[in-house]
Image 1: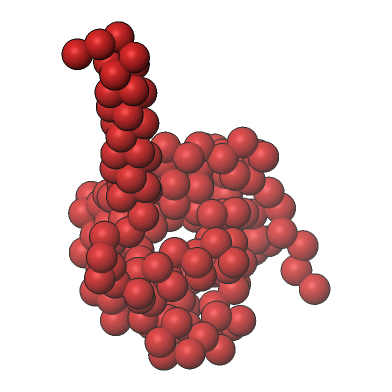
Image 2: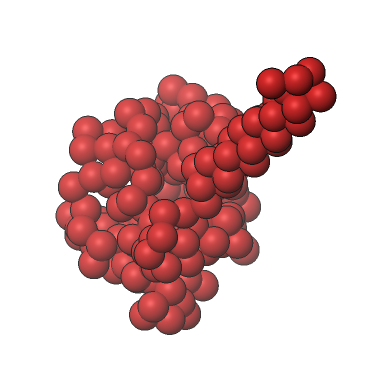
Length: 175
C-alpha cells in the first residue's frame, strides 16, 4: 500500500471510529427503544411540580445534592402548634424511602395527602393542588418514582410542637 492510500485508509478509519463512538454515545444517552412513556412523563412532572425543591438534600439551602436526587431533606418546615416536618425520601429504597409503597399508595398520597399508614401529610405538601392531576399524570408520577434508583438516605424524623428539632428548619407562617 502506498503512503497516500495509507493516509486515506487511516482517515477513513478515524472517521468511521468517530462516528461509531458518537452513535454509541447517543444510544447510551437516549431511552431504550420502547421505553415506558409513563416513566418519561413522570420524570417531566417531578421537575415541573418541583418535587426536587423540597425532597432533594441541600435544595432548600440552594445547593441540591444531585447524587441524592429526591432522597429526602435535612432541612424541615416548622409549622406553629404542629411541629417540624422533614421532606422524606421519595426513592424506592425499602428502608429509608417509599420502596414499600405501591403505585396506588403514591397516587393516593400525592392527591389526597393520605399515606398508606393512614397518617396525613402536612399542608406544606401541596396535595390540594396535586389533587387536580389527571389519572394518567398521577400514574406517570408514581411509575417514575418507582423506577428510580433507590437511595439510602434517612431524613430526620418529624418532631412535635413541644420537642426540640435535631436539624435546621424553615418556619411556615400560617394565614
